[in-house]
Amino acid sequence: MADIQPITSIEKYRELVEQNDATFLIELYAPWCTKCKKLESALREAGPKCDMYKLNIDADPFIDDPAFESVSSLPCIWLYKSGKKHDIPNANVDAVMAIVEGRRV
Image 1 (cartoon, rainbow, N blue to C red):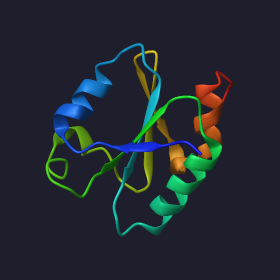
Image 2: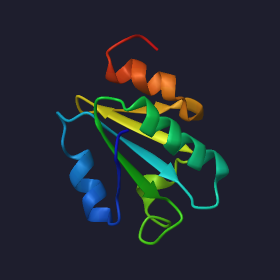
Image 3: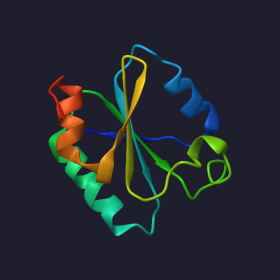
């Protein structure tokens, strides 16, 4: 099973997204979100070949940060590959795997 590391500061988030050549995903979640818990379990099982992080969007300092204003539903996955951010609709694990592996979505 893959490990999903927490992002606990806005500095860590910005450091990650500035790594233009890295492939990684960020799961945006809230502790009260049942679907988020299921998604995390599915991601651990699927184990995409990239670093995985999770960010509690309801926690300070993230709750009021403009970088997260576009998040309209949870769970939400942002996958970064070759400097490009991919929004994964409906937090679809299959779409994550396809992008990481270079397949068409």
